[in-house]
Length: 130
Image (cartoon, rainbow, N blue to C red; front, side, top):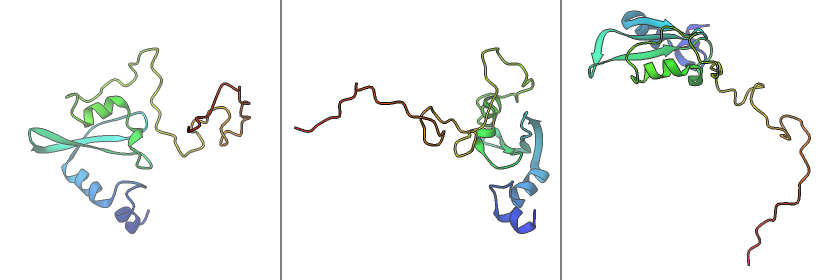
């Protein structure tokens, strides 16, 4: 990726300023299963709390952040998640928002799903003004 792209295209990857800030002031706290890396300030503490941020793996998409790391980023929990494999059997694995992609949910009968829409059952009566 060229220098111009690194400076001006934040949606492809972090801009050059964020990279420099991370290298000079960031301390790596951990990574998640998707390869996102989580940082906090090495020494500077603002309002008693360290600044926290994430560098995404691939395209910048906030829904890539799993719930455990979201809690840590927003100072809801103090400690960073350590064991990501510890899940309940009823929990589904984290998945980013797939809206607008080929993996998005398309209900039965949707034009995008190319399904056959069920026939009307006749139980609907449209409102008629008096």
